Structures are given as structure tokens and as C-alpha cells.
Length: 363
Image (cartoon, rainbow, N blue to C red; front, side, top):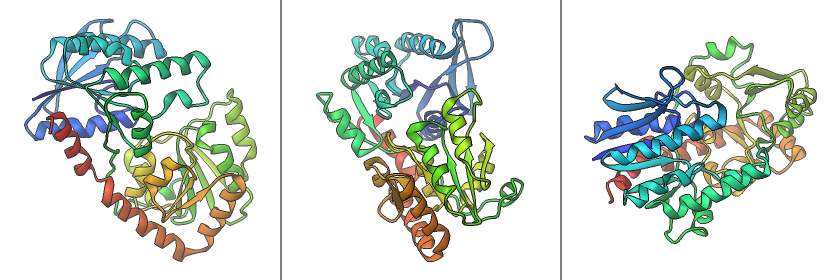
């Protein structure tokens, strides 16, 4: 069977969770005997012209939009949705942000599977027109797709209220990390097992300001590492920096996979302040690394991380959890054991990818 993957920037992964997922799924399907085509948004080459190549046995079709920014992504998504109608096989669309462009595939009676991602229109960072666009595309995507896919039971319930066919639930996956070079940690001046870490975009819905404020009151002798880009012209970023005590580190964004894996593996606990969304890839990766987790208390994080972790509702509660984690090694070890058990039970890549294959094959 041919599987056509749309909705991402391309492979190999250089951007976000969907790209990382596609870089896992495409080789898996190829090894299983399927033909895979991935649509890739090019940054160089002729404008608005298609060219095709092969990467590890996977076909890639590249298209460079005329525009830039968000408009470029929309231009690319529209071009891919039009082009794929000339391809055989099943279409897997990762994300619903431009679902209106996929209507033509369904008019041509193509089988379209769509991953519904998170509840994008609820994110505080978007303007009112952007929220309306995402809301409308969520409704369109849920109803025009042959099968909607949710990565979390709460997203499954949310999407089910908007469409006539119940979405299938398949979560995200992560590798199990059992060892990592401590050199990456020491190069940043950190001591293994004596720092907390957050790996997330620095924005309000990820509770970064609350995490920094909480840690800055602990006076524990440990460090707090906040990975992510800080823009000096961004008011929220300035507030995060202003709230930071001397033991809060801002090394910027780190994209090197071995370095990120090492920073996770050697931390005392992983900080996850996300307030909305489904199965967040960063949280799943923390479980795969056997991290104790201090997470914002909501139904999304509770299902992913399980009951063996530490949850907070505000800065004061977060500070209490941080103090407890930094002081009580027995509780940390119990949480680490719980994290590995949760990861093995639900988030192993082989299980996730085989569930996608069964869905693609109509089983």
C-alpha cells in the first residue's frame, strides 16, 4: 500500500513532534513493505515547483512556497493537498490547521486519516481571528476525514463531540533511554541529579513563569534549567528572566538529540507546565528517560504521566513539590520507577507505530 504523509515540514525531523513522529513512522512502514511518500516544505530551490527524491527508501516531494511565515505553510499545505490527488494510496494528514484544504481529497473519494493534534484554538497566544480559523478547521477536519485520530483520551472525547464518527485513540511514542553521557550536563556546569529541567516553548500556557517563580523560592542548592529561546523584545520572556533567582539557568534552545537526552536522563526531575494539549511529546520522552515528573495538574498530564508523579496547580504548590523532590530521594526513585512502567505500558514506539499501520491498512 502507498501511504502519503501531509501536514508536516518534512523529514528528517528538524522542527516539532509531528516531524519526529513522521521520521519514525515512514521508515517503519517502509520496512513493513509499504511505499511511503512524504510531502516536504523546501526552503531552497525553484519557487512553487515540485521536485522529488528518495531518503532511506522513502519518496519525498518538495515544494518551496512563494510566501514566508505562516502564509508559506498554508501555501505549501494547499499545494500538497492538490498534488496528492494524483497519487495512489491512503493520505495521512498530521494536524488539522488547514483541514479546509483537504476537502478536495474527500470529494475525490480518497481515504484520509487525520491526526487532530491538540485543541489549538484554545491556546492563549493566538489572536481572535487565528482562534476562529483553528476552530473552524478543527470542525472541518473532524468531519471530512475518513477517520479522525486523537493522541489522548480527552482529545478523543473532545473531537467526538464535533463529528459523527468516533475518533480512534493512538498516543505519541518515545524511545526508552537507559544511559546517557554526563559530559553534556557537566559542560553546562550542572551536577547530575542536582537540577530540575523544563524543555518547552517559553510561553504562558506552559507555566514557565510559575516554574521559575516557584524554584526561585526553594533555596535548595540545586539548579533549574529552562531550555528554550528567549526574545528580549517579548514581554513574557522579560518577566520570566526578571523572576529568576541566581540558580535558574537559561542555556537557550538545544536541538542536539544526544545532548537533550542526557539533560533529561541526568536530571533530578522533569518540569512540565503545559496546561492544554493532548499527549505532549516532551512529557512522553521524559517518561522514556525514567524521569520523576513535576507537572501542571490537569486531565491531559494526569493521564500521560500517571498517578505516581507530582502535580501542582499554582506557583506555591509547585514550590512545595520542588522542595519535596529535592529533599526526598526515596520518593524520587519511586516516581522514576513509575515513569518507566507507564512508558512501557503505553508509549513504546513499536506499539504506537503498529497501531498506525493497522489503521492505515483498515484493520
